[in-house]
Length: 105
Image (tube, rainbow, N blue to C red):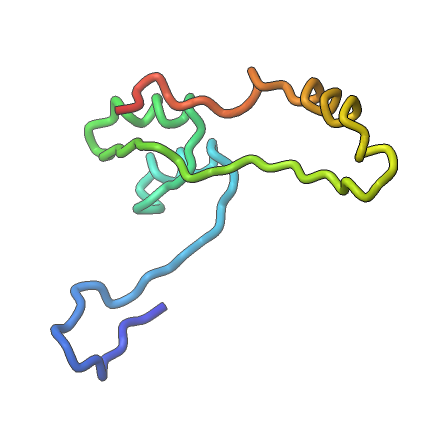
């Protein structure tokens, strides 16, 4: 994305923004440490903790807006049964869900 040279207001200080999707936390961390990217988002707790001690990298951590949702079709004869819905709750490994980093501020 390049800045609009015909913008009527004050000229932005940035000429170009390049956005690259990289969903792997470890890859984001390595690119950040090498200086190949300026911003990494959604680092896993271990990768976040690893870069938090690097004085060349500024880290920010806060609450996430992530919502985990599982919908059930209650028109299905099996999924409409309350005991089946209750049993579905036991399928989720709640301990394995992402947790905030120990360094959360």
